[in-house]
Structures are given as structure tokens and as C-alpha cells.
Image 1 (cartoon, rainbow, N blue to C red):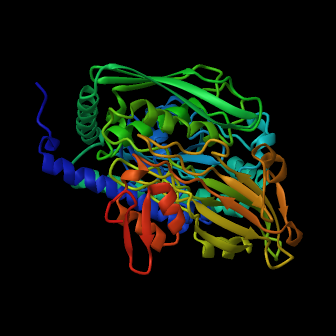
Image 2: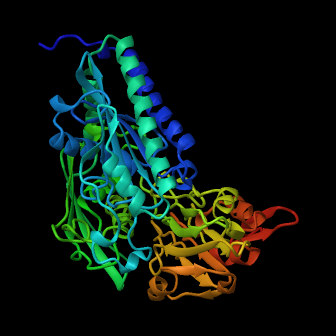
Image 3: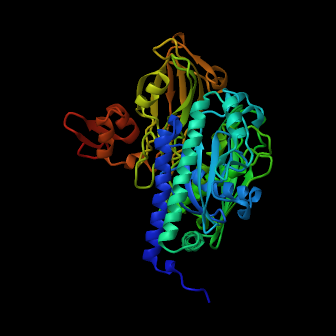
Length: 571
């Protein structure tokens, strides 16, 4: 018979778990407030997790990157293989950026700080954050292996008993384009995990606990039960789905089967192209699993914060040597181009049976800027741009959101003050949303020009998705618009993007660079959309009156704020 636990009381469990979640949220706040790069401080491209002594996730910061949160337990597990629990001591800080262990590419650095009670390992505070540079080629499409994508650190001790590993810091300083910014961000990550570790120990002291395992087991058991109950409520069967998207050399297709048997679910990527020889589009298995389980969390149990227990009923398979499970040393820096495709695959396979399915979304894109300011100081940042989220059965998609991550579009004022480039406009893109009973979210149009100060020298590299295959609609909904890049108003052909804007020197003679992100897919028949919702988009200048009539069958009279279906006899 199991001994009683303080967490048998659900109120105590909720209070203590909530306290741990607040510690993870504080870790995120400390990191954002102390980081130097806009990628972390403004774009929120980070994850923060509290784990038990086994490396199993217990709580995370709710608005941090779900892929990073889902990857951190794998990172902790691999670090424990290299540095067993009994060898760790106060002041140790563990570190790696191995894409096959962590979040899939070298710029995502993992820092895990152990904390102790009475000299015994009690848990970990961990963070993954996207640093602004890690060396390697600027034009990602040209990379043929991970060796060309930057400096690679296997599992190491960044600090041993409080003493810094100067070899790591020296290597970074000599290998990246903006060393002060990168080293400053790394210091911020270490500081944030250290604050969380201290406060986790304070929480253990308050409740008389020696470690996090008792709380961890209680939380994970309940999460696992909830996921199993949800899976068991779905009909058993095999649910195949094929998804085609834009690859570096033309269309690529991935086929998968979602198998449901009782209270367990398997995602099997059965038809996957072999790993690609260049361009960094390969998604390591750690990234593939994280993206897949995140999508399942969204469509099955969005109300439950993720932890280790939630995913025990789920298995994910992908062929070795494929773009979803590449072998080392494949190039992986632009892994989102393939890894993100797992989200519409899961959504498409479970459409019609999962309780929270949405239409496919417009993925975010980015412009990476590397150069020097007028004083010659090296700078590096990525200007992220959100696309439109797919519509749900009862909700319109969110406009200009950096889905499928929790990153945010960097405010124009922050970007301009950092780089000095001139943002001529940054606005929602009219008529980009996929039409439906519920429409998709609108994409974004951003126009950037060279810095006003000619002493500033920058090179821009565009990383974009969904160029030829826009987000599909669902249940008779229509697709959103695809991504587009224009140079001085002239569209750049999809296959020309790596050559023309893979590493573009940004000068006054370059003219304007325009990025249009995709709109989300619509859900349901557009002719069934509430006319007043159509009127709202016309009033907001996201839809013309002519388009409202053509796309939705709704006649709008803007001066009188009147809208009605054309088929209505009264009209």
C-alpha cells in the first residue's frame, strides 16, 4: 500500500504546482529582461521548464516556446547520461547546442541548472533560447552539413562548481558574428535558470519536500490519465494523411498514418523523402517528436499544460535517414521548413474526430539581418513576421501570429532602433485570410528599406515558408494566400529566393524588400458566414465590398453599416 502524500489533496496539488509554474514564469521574465538580443527579449524565442531529478518535466512557463519545453526533458536525460546525478554538485551548469539532442539547430542553446537539498539532487531548472548568431553560413540554403552551420557544443559543463569553463566562452567569442550579444544572452540564460533553481529549493523547504519527485508523479499521473481518456473517446482506426509543401528544389510530400488503439495513439510517418543534401531543411527526431506531440496536445488536450505524463500514451516514428529523422551530420539550420509540416499533418489526419481541430495556419517567416551599426559594432537579429492562424469550427483565426510557436513579431520600434533599417510599413494584408464560415487569420505585409545612415552595413537573409502551397481550408473552407517576397515591388519566384534574398546586401540602391506572410485557412462554407462578421472586415478595410459579395455572397452598405446575404429575398 502506498504511503499517503500531501498531493492526494487536489487543492494542495493545485497550489504547489501553480507555485512551480510561477517560478518557471519568473525564469522567463528574468531571461527576457536581461537578454541583449531582440530574439529573446522581444520575440520571446525561448523555453523555460522545471524538471525533477530524473529530468522529467513538471512545469513550464505558459507563454514560452512549446517546442523548447517539450525538448528540455530529452536534453536533461542526455545530459544525465554524460553527467550522472551522483557526479553533480552545487554551482554546476550544464550546456549543449547539439541539434540531435535539443531543439533541432545550433542557434538554440540549452542550459540546465541542477538544484539540491541536503547535498542530494532535487531537480533541474532548464531553458532553451535562440541566440542571435552561432557562426556558419549566412545563406542557409547553401549549407551542405551541420559543420557549415556554426559551432557545435556536445554536452558540457558551462560551469563546474561555480567556475566558468573558459574554453567555451573563448570559442564562442572567436566563432560568432556578434560575440558580446551572444555572450550576454548566454549569461542571461544562466542567470534565469539560477534564479529558478533557488526559488524551487525555497518551495521545497516550505513544504518539507526533499525533491520534486512526489509532486512530479502526482502531476504526471493525472495528465497521463486525461490524455488516455481523450484518446479512448476517439474511434479506433488508422487515419492516413498526405501533405505537400514547398521544398528547396520543388514540391515535397510527406505521408503519415495516425493509429488509435484503445487509449494509445501512434503517429507513423510512413512516406517521407530522404534527408536533403543541402539547405538545412532536415528536422532532427527530437524536433519532429516535439512538434508532433505539440500538435496532438493542441487538438486533443489544449486545456492541460504539457508535462511528461501527458505524452506517455503517444509514440512517434519516422524513417532513419529521412528529412524527419536525418543522420548526423545533415544540415538542419532551417529545420522548420519540414518540421513545422507535422502540424497540418496531425490536424488533417484527425480532422472530423478530434475535439479541437483547426484549419492549417500560415507559418511565420523571418528576415535575418547581420552587420554593423554606424559605429562599427557587430549586430545580428531576426525580424520575425507572423502569418494568419487557421480558423476553428467556431472561431476566426488569429491575425499575424507566429504560429506554430509562441514567439512574437518584434515591434517595429525595437527593430528599427536595433538595426537602423527603415520599416516603411507593417500592416495586416487585406484579403489574405482563407474564407469560410469562420475565416482564417490575416497575414502581414512588411516593407523594409536600407538603414538611413549609410555607415551602417547589413546583409539580409530571408527564411520563408508556404510559397507555393498556402494553408488549406477545412470542411469546405478555402485556403489562405501564400507567402510572397518582392524586391522593389517585383515578385521573386519561389525557387529564386535562395539566390536573390538568401544573402542580400541591404543598400539604398537595393530598394524596398516586401514580405507578405500567408493567411490562415478557412473553416466551413463561406456562404454560411454571419453577414455582420463580413461587414466588420469591410469596415476594417481588410475586405472590399466587392470581395465580400464575390467571396461570401454578402452585400455590404458601409455608410449605413448594413450587410445581408444576396440570396435573402429582402435584398
